[in-house]
Length: 509
Image (cartoon, rainbow, N blue to C red):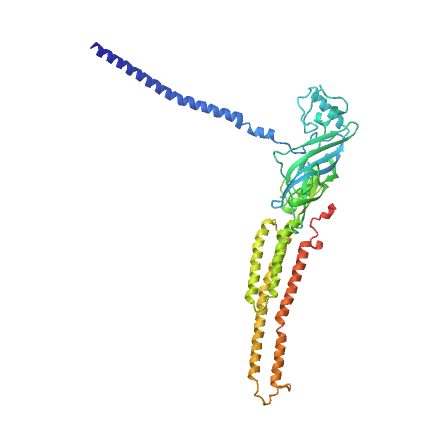
């Protein structure tokens, strides 16, 4: 009995322990999910605060400035005349399908500023002696400004690589037709200021993609003017009087022989300076390509020139850099024009085949027509899409007409020859039926000749008239050859008087 009671007590204690363990497990199970949820919520909140929320600000900080970002407001000493030089390092690509091009250009600007040297020295010394914490505009893109200790005195003390140009006036010039400035681009620059000289120079390396109108009427013998538009901010009494074109170069820094660009050759580069009223510019674009302002508009964007206010008095001082390029025409001549002319030349065999072989003549022309159609599909993939026919398109159209002309011409000469042959057979039958028995007198015709003699004369005339199909074939052959030669010359070589507004590369010679 004692052992039984002890066993029951042990079993009771074990049951109580199990119940307590289960209660604890239930409590832990109800608390753990709440703790896990709070921990995950805290982690997501920290991620949002530290990473997601600052992203727009980081994007602003990491974004590169436009290449020609100026400083200093109005220049000391009044408005400046800025000389412009342009050196093309490389024309990377010409995308004639999307009317875009990409280039690396070194722009060199220079002007007179007698205070530039002293301002550069003040900015440099302020950074070196610790008066300012940072230099916002170093005189060189290398950004390697040492402290006062260790700077060699003399000529090298204020070299651009180790100087600060925070207080030097620089013009702020925008790019009007820029499509994209690549994120990973190199953007070198340098500000040159020599002691004892009032001249200031600022060079900038610009890598960008631009959009520009193109004219393909003489494709593949076309010349394109790739336009890069630069402009100072329109102002009343602008800080820049005018831009003055200076030096240009179609190649810079990169050496080597051979083609520098696929499909095109750089013919030249030129700078065109402009200065016009902002109101005239607005009226030109809005009046020519849109509708003018409503009469009740309180501040009309269009209006009379020289009116009061900012729009009427502001001026835009700008300059354009034109890169002239010529297409490599030999590639297209060998792969497009020569095959087309060879196909149309084969159609001339039509006029040598006898007129009676109508099936052979028509079969040849139909085959050449289909071959020309297949070739046009290949050619169209390389032709730019435009609102007007190109020179190659016009040439292919002429070749279509020449090949097609052989079909109706073959039908005409075949019908003519068949008619003449039927008449000849009829005459020959008349001769046989009109033969007289030997020894009988032949009847007389109206002209006094024997009837058999008159029939013979008509047969001879009919023989001579059978040359008409041959003459028609030869005349058609000569006309088609002349048409192909003349049309090819006019279309491919071009007549300047017929297209006076086409870009001309002779301006670079």
